Length: 310
Ligand code: ADP
Ligand code: MG
Image (tube, rainbow, N blue to C red; front, side, top):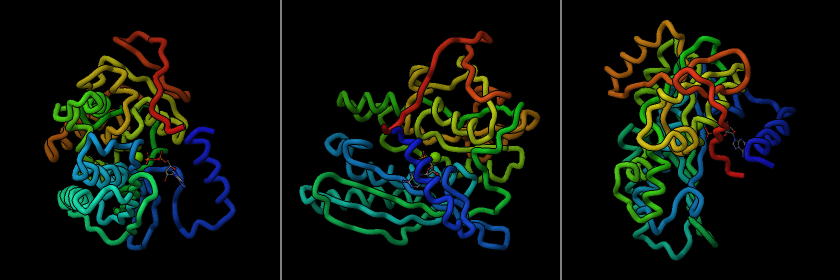
């Protein structure tokens, strides 16, 4: 059993139950059209002690901050605007009031940065570890919503900035160096909310998602959903670490998108002018169904894989 085969089994089990106008499972968010050409979007992500964070290394504040950012990143990934979250937290007794206070301060800080309100949740004790589950809600005009299945042959593949910092930062943190630039990238990821909204309004952006498990894995989701392949030029990969960290490192929370090649330049320019984020072209969508990795035009024989939980 893999993470993705389990999700596929769950999806298949619910095929015979009415969808009640919802679009999902399978994309970064579930989508519910609400009339007036608008939709609400829903997404949920967990942060679990020992799996996503080590409380002895990372402060409660940073965990709270990250819990919001990783969730609203999935809203941005579909071109929508995050508006609210629900927070469920199970806290073992050994973490007192101080931990909870720090957590909620970080959670509030990230929420305030994008005007996202907290509208509910659940608070319980935990018999073992800290378990955090956040649901984020977004909204968008229907025509702005970008899915994983829209990539077209000939599209340029773009990423929303420099990759590999989160994976390298995690290694720094595990070595006890918690304040390096990469460690900060890992501890305090910045969801590309403004970028996502802007790219949602661009009709020549065809497919979009956020990078949570590493490009090597996440780009394959776009390819599978769109029924296409890709060439990725490794020498163009923007990275502040190794190429392996850039391709396989999870928890980047940067946007990954495909755009009509004739609009590539103007979209990069508009995104940079409006947000300061430099989108970087890393390859091309092709016919086929897999990724061909190239370096300086030469095909190379490697198999990069992203992160899978099991
Ligand atoms: P992301 O990395 O963008 O959060 P995931 O890879 O976690 O997306 O999930 C892929 C898809 O499967 C998403 O549409 C998500 O909502 C759905 N999904 C994941 N776990 C479950 C589950 N336990 N039940 C129903 N849907 C799920
Ligand atoms: Mg995602």
